[in-house]
Length: 59
Image (cartoon, rainbow, N blue to C red):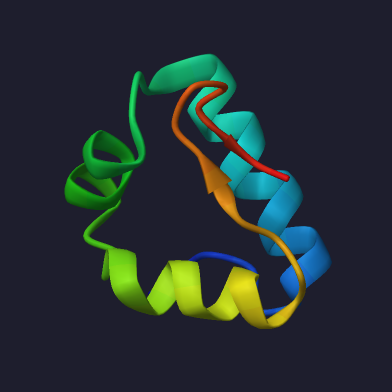
């Protein structure tokens, strides 16, 4: 997970913005940015956020 924010709140904003503007799914984002999906979800889950595929964002 290089070149992405390490702070969970800033990471949330970064990921949700990219999902909204560039990607139709979390899998597409992770593949394109070479991010481990489980690690990303774990980081954001620890901060209290869960991926909602229906909305294509973390809440």
